[in-house]
Image (tube, rainbow, N blue to C red; front, side):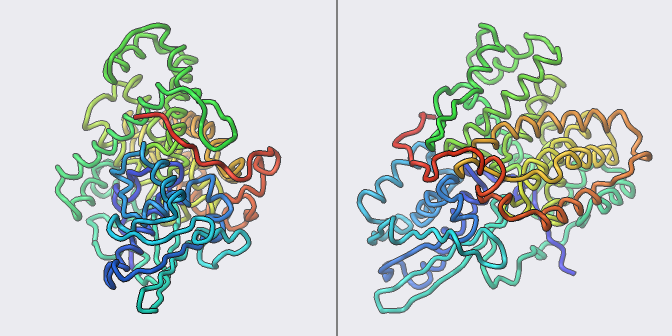
Length: 482
């Protein structure tokens, strides 16, 4: 059996909202297709078309799949591309009816004809499928199909190396029980086990610097999202709430930057309601940014991107966690839990409903917080199980295909549940636990298989079928400046 080796940087990816499976994944697929075209010669390309299947078609406009594919074909990098140029660049493509492939070759491209949403068709391997076709000036044609399988992971059809077996890790882990085994055998924490495994890819220093950069992007997202007012794009008229909550909670306390903001928050005390409101504010901030095509980190997905940062920010502000090593350990631990769910179940809402996104992110945050507060490996795994246990069966039903209702509020719920799961685990003896994390992973996957397709990111069931929203979300002309 080939083990799948997943790095912390596979679970935490920097990109642009609103969806890892519907935005970041298709964007990366388009970049891979551009690499294929380079082998033949971009200057020979005459025509390119795109076909979106299944969930990518049904909620593609609300999730920005069309936008992502076009920017990917332009050769733009989701990690570094200026988020303020997302809408203007796509607007230019639609207005000029031209596509600048990889920024090198301009070809005709008509959005309404060359980008096709196949609402009633789905490919068997995965609901999130996109096919790119290209005709060269010598008459030759090629086509490639990619599957966006959740969390920004992309698989090309017919690829044989779906599982990354190219790296042999010091502590191979497929299940939670494997992680528990290595913890018992070595006495290492989850974070230390992950750090040791990461050394197979890069130096310890490089890993730590990379993880701190992940936190930098998360932190900037929280801070920015807590200071922008207005309405989210897409036509539903959803108002941003994080900035108003931030202003009310601070009650006039002044600050000039992130560090001073933390001190201003701490100055308000630590009573339960105050702390609860701040956790909600942190999560709302991230996912309002995500819904606005802002730069976020998959954790493990964009739709659930607010949970882990909100709980980490809670740890920093209210639990004396403002220390680089503590932050690194938190994220390393969280990533391993996400990896276990990716291997044993899914990170894709189109495959498993929202339990695969908010549920997994809550488990990740619960385990990370537990270990960060001094819990054992067993207690951390217990916390992860508790968090998932209370998300099992959660459907994905985005109203109007937008990652706004109920998605943004679900991140606040996932963050709060993570903290409560951690508290329960820290106050419990794992010997008395009746359900293991592996049981929860298996149950989540079995629930996903049994779940009706309309509850899997199609906007055909749940709240999406009850709330009459705008079926064709409108691309905004502009977004708030960074």
